Length: 188
Length: 66
Picture 1 (cartoon, chains in turn yellow, purple):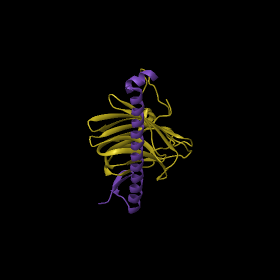
Picture 2 (picture 1 turned 90 degrees about the horizontal axis):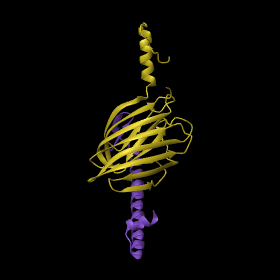
Picture 3 (picture 1 turned 45 degrees about the horizontal axis):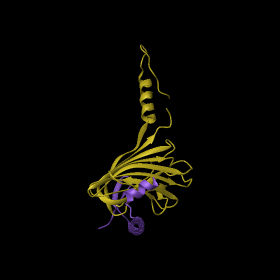
């Protein structure tokens, strides 16, 4: 049922109010589809059944408080990682120097590097559940020694696989932190 | 001590198979990183050699090319 707009003097019934609340919870701009979840000292992070036909596009928020090294990401379907056809392009830099890089290998998306000071990532995932290629883009902060790096990553997984989840891996040491997943509403 | 995996909301010990797969992936990633570092260092050395021959700095070269 679409959102009801009330006018002055109109009787507000329980069913109408409940319908509006229900509408807001499922059609809000960003809807949490995986509540913030903590993990401790893990070398693999598997998240299943978060991409569905309810939403086309998603946001993953990742916060890391311990660990270090490169973080990479794969898309998965039915609890199995896809390990081919990834491309990643990265622009990264400190306060004074800018770099550009192509990730080596096509078996995952490169996201960013960080150290024990921590880091965080905002990852947009476009169309993972549709039978078309999946695009990701990120804005990330990764600490490294005395410097802090900004990473702006764009990635594309070229296949028609309909993904329902993702995995992440630290290349150096186990990672500790939290993640949450949100779906973007498809309707006004 | 076994490595840990966060499996859809739950932290648990990796199975032997999972751990072996992760270690193999990690080895490949570290080899890629080393190769990339080496390639970048070689490129920087080659760039500096050209600058030295021309007798200009990197900033001056950027100005010329800009």
